[in-house]
Structures are given as C-alpha cells and as structure tokens.
Length: 455
Image (cartoon, rainbow, N blue to C red):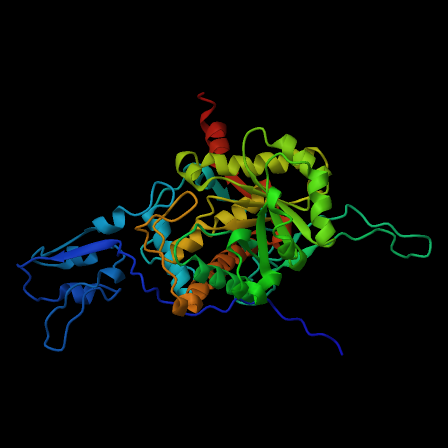
C-alpha cells in the first residue's frame, strides 16, 4: 500500500491565561462627558459601547489600539488616552512590554498578531533589530505555505551530514550513514528556570514536544517518572561528571546534552556510547570571543550538535552579541570546511518570531526558545537559574494542558510567520535559508555604504 503524504500542521486553539496581562493603553473618561456617544460610533475596536439603558459604558482598555479616534471625536474633550503605567514598567530594554504583549497574544490565539493602526515602533536597532529581510531576489510569484497553495518545508536535521555518498562498482552504498534526526520545525524548547511548580511545567513541555514532534531539554536532576512516556522527545542535560549517575537517561534518549567544562571529549564520547551507541551528543556551550578553538575540537572529535547559548541577561546589555555569536561560529565552521559535520543550535535572546529565520540566515540550523515560552505562561522576565519569588508564573496540576496549548500556540504563530518569510523569499524549505546572508540587509552595512565610515 502506498503511503499518503501528510502535511505537517500545528493544531492551535484559544488558550486564555489565568494571569491577566496589563492592557497597553489606559483610557480615562472625565465627568464632563455628555453621553453624546461619538466615541462609540467612531471606535472600530469596540472599546466604547452603549449599555441597555442607552448610557456609554466604561472603556474596555484591552481592546484599545491607541488610534486616538475617540479623543478627536469627543465634542467635549472628555476622553484622554495614554500608556498604562502597569504595562510600561514590564520587562526591560530587550524584552520590552510590546514584545511581551505580542508573545501573550500569540500564545493565547495561535494567530499572527496584526494591528490595524500600523507599525509604530523603531525600524532599526541593535542585534536582530539591525537586520531586515531582503525579498528583492524573487523571480517568480511568492510561495504561500500558510494557506496551502504550495507546501513549504520547515523541517531541519539534527546530526552530522555526509558531504557525499560512496558506492562500489555494483552501485551498492559503501558510506556509513550517520545517525540523523529530522524535526518538522527548527525550534526546540530549552530547559526552564526553576520555580515551585516546575514539575508541572516539565510535563507541559514534554507534552508540547510530543505533539509538535520536536524536543524539550530538561535538566537531568529534574527528571521524574511522570515524564517516562515522553522520553523520545526529551533531551536530558547532564553535567559531564554525572554521566554514570544518569546512565539510565542516556540509555532511553535519542539525544543527550552535556554541559561543557574543558573535559576530555574522546573520553566523554566513549563513556556515553557505552550506554547508548546510537545516541546523538549535544554540547551546551556558552559563547565567548575565543570559542572557535573549542568548536573545532568538539566538531572534529565527533560531537553531533553544538548548542550555542548566550546568557539571556546579555541580551539587554549588548543585543549585537547574539547576532555576532551565530555569524562568528558559522563563518568559522565554513572556513574550516567542517560546517556540515555539526548541527548548530542557538538560544538566548530569541524573543519574537522574526528571530527564528534571522538566526538561521546568520548560520544556525535551529533555535532553542526558553524565556519566550515562560513569558507566555506569566513570567515577567526573570534571569539566572530560577524565577524570582514574586514572579507570577504558575502551572498548577490542572493547568498542564492549558500551559502546553499556550506554548503550542506560540510556536504555531511563529511557524506561520516563518512560512510567510520563506514564501516571500521564494524558498521551498527552511534548510536553504541557513547562512544565506544575501537574504538579509544589515543596517550597519547600509549606513556605512550611504553615509561612509564615521568611526
């Protein structure tokens, strides 16, 4: 029987959080309101409504888009509109209130957030904000992967790829094919920060990874029996000196991740392969300017995946550090002719949908998201190893499915936006986007080209 092709699809549905996100705008109606109701007739977002008694209701701040039509329409000037102070104090300079609000909307609906009043933000900045997508090379109509007229693949491979295949004189394959795992989206879930309901969140992450057919990283110390049924979609993160302690996790996993600490790579690989010869080995490696020598050693020693991460707090202080790290490592691997011998996953600073294709254009194979999905569950941007005591993130046992659905919605929305970008570039698959710097424009380069080097 011929197998029928099944298109990858992320099932999204509304998932309303129990934690209310502050509205961006705050509308005040003053006592000189005459109930003329011009505001209700003018507003297209249903912020102002009339009750059954014919009186104007209190404004619904959550619906407001900041267009100011109501303030202009009111004949008595009885309405004022401004930024809600509770909204304005959220996050930081990188995970801005607007970015956090977007994550909330995406995780609640699973749809691409669109504002009817246009983009009012900055057009350039540091890090990912200094990159613009370039669709100028299109020589045919754009592909449409969201609405189904043409299929666009977002699948990526984890593991080493052979540069070529060898065959004998009888056309039999001689090359030994390395273990390679395909996932349908270039996104994995990074391990969460610790908090008191961490066990419930881990189950939600495992369920999400299973439904999306991707992977969720968990710290080996946090593993528990509730996760057994999700083993095939979990990546235990183990310290190199605790391999024997968590050998049972290595035996049942397809991928294991080791915290890097200048250990003997060959000895490490031998210890892991003793328990599971087919397991893929990922190294969790923090980026620094002298990282390329370590990358060389890891790649040539037979490591399958390098998980390059930037400390989330560094995103605030130096967003350029994130983009520079991906480009730096990818360029080095290419110059050494070993790029396809390793899978490069990057995490840290992945705060919005556009950061996924931008990371891939810079040279990553896939990205790991962590703080973004935790914001979707209520976090107000925590750094370090655990959430702050007053952080509102909370996953009760009865909320596990809700938490899972919100993360699924977030990734579904991000995948749709990835498909839009791939379609606009005329690409059939995300693999072709890797390292394609020509698919982007960089603000620094354009500024230098137009205005000259002022340094």
